[in-house]
Length: 277
Image 1 (cartoon, one colour):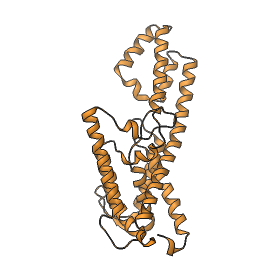
Image 2: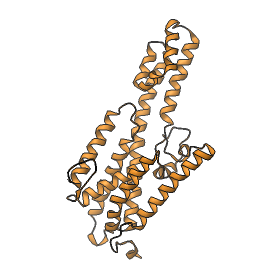
Image 3: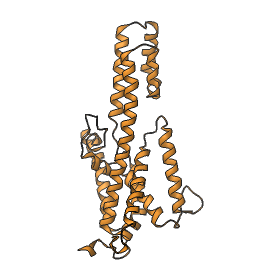
Image 4: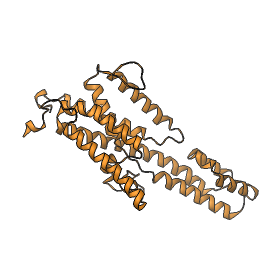
């Protein structure tokens, strides 16, 4: 039975990678059909939500790995899955590859949720402080949570009216509703995609084949895999810490996939070589 899990030869499209490509493609097509025919956003059910969200379900830790927000998102992840995953599955065998894929995917989700819980706590503090002492001037503290909120024409009109009558209780009540809505919006943003697991594959490729030259479209010269991984990891860390307004990419999920992948490979490499697969 163990031989079934050992690599038996090189395949350009090994079975686990092939099935993952098919499943992800079918899930994306299903999401389009449900949205177009029935107006159902399936990501509201299978995307990964913050644990305090009313939409959160434990199974989302797995299901979000098979959903994607756009065709470009799907295409990038599936191309990377094929490019790096095929080599790794041929090297490790299907069982070890599948274990690695899901552990890095779940690890990515764990780190993402941890960061998300910290960010939500920060939002709660600001919102609760405002609800305790609402005022026209204090309302602008909410801008540090969501700067884009203040760019809407409707809100600008509201602020102009409130500025003319700052003691108006209806305006104050409405501002409190906005503050609560900001918190709920932060809680109810779904995360979808296999990116965390894909970044785990990228990390594994860089560790196992560090000197392999990669030829990337957006890099005019060949670059060794180990340097490519370092550059990508550094960019993700920078973008995650910067947390720029309008950036809806889960950078810490990507880092989580790489982090869990690193420790998993280190653990496997400590074992005897004849039991590596």
